[in-house]
Length: 219
Image 1 (cartoon, one colour):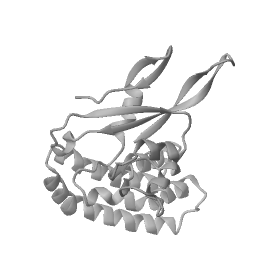
Image 2 (image 1 turned 120 degrees about the horizontal axis):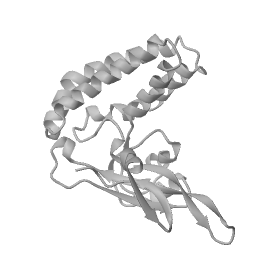
Image 3 (image 1 turned 90 degrees about the vertical axis):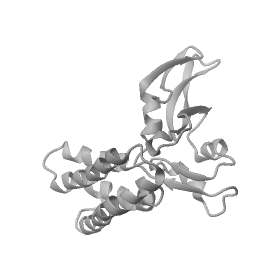
Image 4 (image 1 turned 180 degrees about the horizontal axis):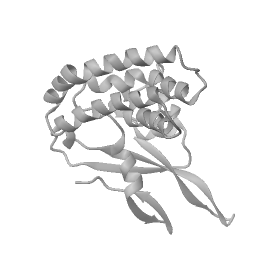
C-alpha cells in the first residue's frame, strides 16, 4: 500500500487543495501465483492512518508499506479486526544509504548498499518460484546475510552520531527491522513496495479534468 498527493479542485475558491490517492496492489507472479495482478486506487481527502484503516476494513494478513507512521494504527494493540502484519521496504532503507554515497566518500553507507544488493541478487534468482522454494532459499542464503547485516547495523549505530545523515539512515533500518525481516518467514512477501510505487509513476490518467500519475500492473 502507498499514498500520493493529488491536486483537487476546491469549488468556490478558484484554486486546488491537496487530496490523496491510496493505492492497494497485489502481484502474485513473483511467487508463482495464478491470480492476475491488480491495483485499486481510493481517493481520500487526507493522509491520516484512519484512511488506510477504512480502506482495509476486514483485511487480515501481510501488508507491505514504507515507513510512514500513519500505518502504525493498523497494528495498534487496541485495534479491532483481523490481524495485520506490516512488512517494510528494503528499497526505502537502501535509498537512504544511496543518498549518502552521492555526497562524497561514505564507506559505511556503501557497504550497507552492497549488503542489501546481495539480498536483491538472490531475489532475482528465485523470482517465479513457489512460496516454499523461495522461503527455503531465503532461509539458506538470505538469512545469514540479514544476520550479518544486523550485527553490522548494531556495530555502526553505536559509533555514528545519531543526528548525522548516516545515523538517521541506520536508525530508520533499526526502527523497522522486524518488518524488514518478515520476508524470511513468508515466501510470498517481496523485499519492497515497488508493486504500488510503480503505479504512481508509470501512467497518466485523467480524472475530473486533472492529470495524475498512476498505473495498472505490468503484465
